[in-house]
Length: 284
Image 1 (cartoon, rainbow, N blue to C red):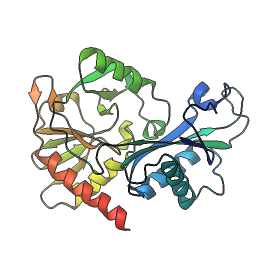
Image 2 (cartoon, rainbow, N blue to C red):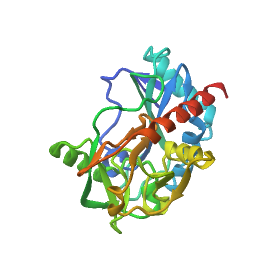
Image 3 (cartoon, helix red, strand yellow):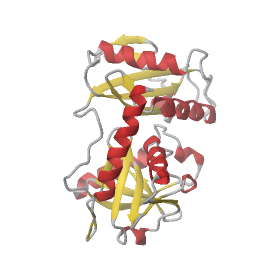
């Protein structure tokens, strides 16, 4: 079942019309997050990112759209799918209502909540092979819209097709300055010695929730240094480790880029600390 504007519908129900602006113009935002035993991981961060993004896109935020209201709607969807005791992937999509061309007739919104069970309640390090390559056919723009989690993801879709056609697990995206920005589905971190480096938001990467958590964890560690600086493609093969982050996987180590193979020691250390922060969100 899914939740459309507060009502639960079976998966076979068609609720979106041909006028839907998310379909016609990509006029939509979304959040994906984990829920374990009724606790939404890092829910406050997801909620405030969503509210800020809606304001940037001039969407009208309904009065009832409190943190508590949306949390209750998510949990209602989970209950409707009988997933109360399972780890769950949640996707919350917000799209602008009404007709119109590029100019919308209204800034009112609708919401859609979908849930799917996950294999593990906490983040795990993938010990398998995970090879990546640069995708250079199209570029990420260096602007605030690239920082938002919108449904305008054609670049990422085409990069995913390229990765599948060429046998890669993922691709690294570059911006208009030919700097490495992120992966298809997550933020990028490099490890060189005790330095953990990630691109700044000004380069066009997603303002990721787990990105923020890793920055907090590394910044607080006495034996590591966090650096937010642009990453050149030439730096990739000089790194000791590389990994991607997102709210569902947590930390995904990269095992190989071209001829260079990478370790996973820092990734394994950080995933334990990330799980500790997720557990803290359960008790708060």
